[in-house]
Length: 365
Image (cartoon, rainbow, N blue to C red; front, side):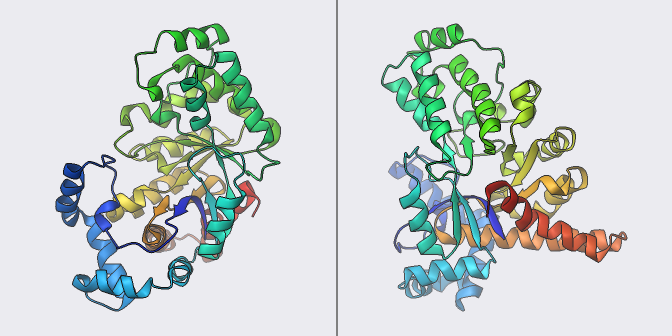
């Protein structure tokens, strides 16, 4: 498997805290206590704990000690988990904007034993420029410079978390004048909510630059952590943008299965030949019905444009568990489709496409 969407693993072994695998982002003591009390009642934590205990050969109540012993060799433990899940490559979102992704990629490759290809997240650069008082024209220029330099810096793709900023309802006709006005009239808003017209303008321009450079661009869609307004992350909000020349030319990857709008995602992948459906994150937090969601996406979307990922982050167990859940889900779908008459060779090809070949093609593995 080539993991189509991943984040860095913690650099060294820390005590295992499965309650930290959460979508609530508050870090105050009350929030941490709330997560610690609530997490044992979540199915995702229960299943991760049970499977990890089986992997380590211990009882669930002994996980803390067993994991501490196993992870004393942190490199060996991390690489072993990813190998057990069949992960051999990673499309890495390092998080913050970086001029040079080399060190982060090398560190991740060295720790995991996987091939790593980094993608550039653009929103932090825009945030920084806004916070420093740059004009709309200056910010647009900085974004273009960053994108055009990306291939020389080793980036194989781009990413936007616009859904976390001003939402996916992009106005494709936003002008530079409107972009500047949006900066001047939103100074009282939190940084992430400032400059909607500017962010909309940049989004359309980035699609055009990405198409010129043959760089796929990921859009966060669907569920995310508690800093997201979920209603603003429906992939159908992108339809007007996708109908522009830039939106139709770029290779667009809508990530996280757009859950709970996975059927809408499948529809967009069906009718827009440049749109790809990436499946990750929901396998971590809603593991019981992944097979149903996977089947609904694959039933409609072309398998040549479906990618599987984990959205693993922090703890290496998140990569491992998410990959195993996806594999189990595919096994269920495969049995169902074989019973309906699908040929084994066709199913073999579909499996290779969604778990490896499509991601390898897009990101140059």
